Image 1 (cartoon, rainbow, N blue to C red):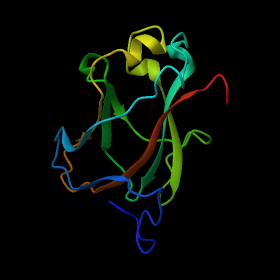
Image 2: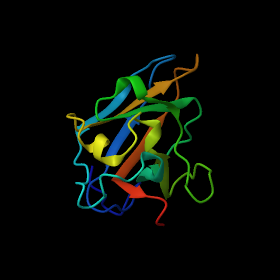
Image 3: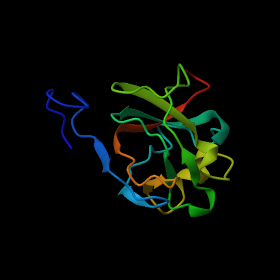
Image 4: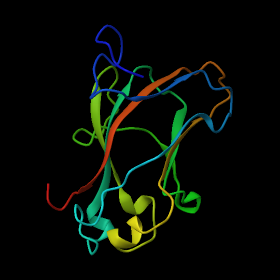
Length: 158
């Protein structure tokens, strides 16, 4: 979606991914985001950079309280090392902000078992996936969330 300033998320850096709707009770894999991501080359992040120093950083706008909704996320098609039951939290407050953009960090080693960035970037898949779950008997959960500006950051340098 493209923000127009008149309704949430009000603004973004151009386009943002939106997942919205009402997943049914105990419904998994509803509201998927899956794309071909472009990962930084080793001239931007040195190949020998330890995976433990890297984070997936992105902006997130939660427009409705998530209540029982969570997200499963995977990078590079690695379903064996998928992050489960993720709830976006601001990297500075460790809280989920409602109705405003927040910056989120997830340690890259949550998505892979490789030791360094060179091994990570060499994985053939470019997939980035976010999958919504409603983990309750309540079928009336509303989801309205936006994701923008995914990047990999060396957290030891900032």
